[in-house]
Image (cartoon, rainbow, N blue to C red):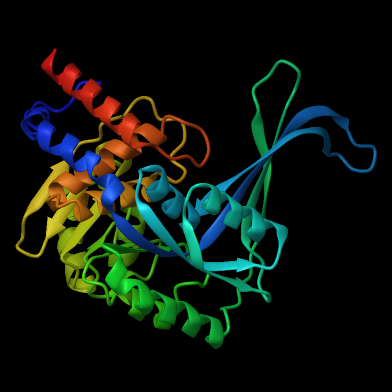
Length: 350
């Protein structure tokens, strides 16, 4: 890919610094408060149509389970080498036990994960099938979740655990997928840390005073209440700029990072500075599932390593450019980031 010439020059000038920051990821201590989800991928071969109903009969081949939702943010941080403590809720079920096992195998501290016997572990089961000589395609998705909030005792238990950990971590990440973990009591405890990174699908104002927010374009539009797209269908730079200012006012954050997919990212701060970061990867994009979690993870680790907000956003952008090349919920590593960064630098120099 050919990078924007101005950005390529900035990247080359910052290369040594960016490599050094990536090398410091393993020193970070991060607490993640999130809606923990288990993503299941069930695949099989289509055998025939059922006689019972006009539906496919699939011969099961494999079931793969990976962390999803807020759990994907946790897992991304761990795969990038950070020391991670997870805070959230799981059900008293097989899915909850599977998610905890995945975390523990990755070296993630699960003491802050509380079992809620009244609610299931949020689980998204994707059922896919294929014929003998065809590609696998998703057929249906089955979600397990509850619309009820956790009881007050559980909310207080989560908040108390968060407060106990604040002095022992370098940052707190709030990964809010709207599944009920991040209630006002829990949010207040999380925002008590001086470095709080918020990735929420809606209701940004609930996190007033956080350090930085990372909304994508639709989330930013929902928060400000107007479209950021021009009549031509493309994102409007003037409207993006206005949204950045409005989001800073709405949230009282120090920074707003609007992620814009193939159009890159736009970073705003309270001094009126605006910085645009082009996408590293606009062509080899196969699946954007979980890319926002990857951005939040690499951004957080950059900030804990002493990166400027621009440097941290570049690292988030770089990490996301790797995971979108793969299907399904996935993560990246320090080595993959360093390799990708060197490839972009080589391409820019050619």
